[in-house]
Image 1: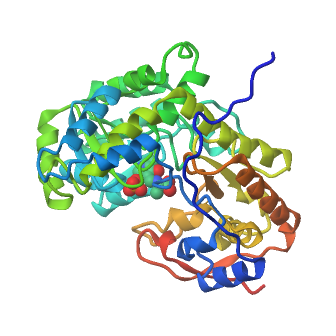
Image 2 (image 1 turned 30 degrees about the horizontal axis):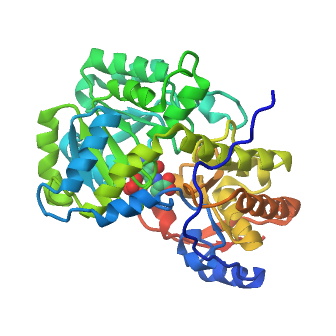
Length: 460
Ligand code: F0G
């Protein structure tokens, strides 16, 4: 079939200059940063794929909305614009703004989670898990077994294993389970979506046991795109219709608006129950700010309202997810092992296959991230043993099943030429992979160590 190539449904009005420092300078900079990519100055990075969070490019209409932001402390017009967009797209009536996603988790969990509780879900994101464990509760991963095989092609690797969920509820009792969390798409599992069928089946289980079902909705629109393009019977639905179908199953959500709402800062909680909304409002006021701004400027809420509509347009999602797939396809062509299928927001390089001679306790995905930076000024992020952290009780490292370098693509920021730079640089690392050595930790924080850890190359 002769189909036209896709292209971005926008043109570029403003540009920001970036420049590439020399390879020698990069080797020096990463040494000074203790081999931790978070500790680099962003100016020393050429193509920054550390995260797709808060790094997107706003549209002219979003910038226009900023000027119209209402900075009133209470009852801001921009809050109501944001609330209307959330009501409209997610169908959830009660809204609390927060300054970002983890703040939404902090507020909601303060109202719902107590010591000894159990929260099942599909590979909880690290801040979600952090907020659960901080409250001396535990996160139980009920993702389907297929998610653990990086080369297996399955359209919905973020799905919840329904048997595992039922077993978890039977083992702990619904009374100790204040919520079930589904992360859409599943970031820790490789940017993998959850099917509508699976969401509905989970909702049936949670309803039966009277347990609230909460979405971690950071990338809900990308999840809807995958449902439309992969799930049978859904191709005729619009993205917004699919969003509506997904959220009909939920009792509420936490949202990091820095992802699919395409703003640089912001988040929210949206809830069905007024009672829970009242309970959360108390914590929102203590931790975030008044209930109609919760840590956000009026202008940011105005941009968020607009971003939610833009982020749920099919053409935008198609171009974004096709760019991620472009990078994945090019890496596969070069023989580089990546996780399949390609994620929505990121490509995950399989470090265990890339560097089989480096044991997990020497952080192969971190090594790969460091080398990719030295080679091309490209910054990714480790999703492996460093991120998985120590067990809060035994203080032992808890190496995960997969050791990945995530290359997350900011929204509407880079061109496919930038993706070619990433491919070129990773190919250079691939060619000298056998000479690479592991890293060892010289400093680590007691929780969430990956942000600030220091490393040194192992000597042998
Ligand atoms: N949930 C998911 C699925 C996330 O990916 C993130 C953040 C959060 C919650 C927390 O939101 O950053 O606004 O507080 N993910 C970023 C990332 C940091 O790089 O994947 P936040």
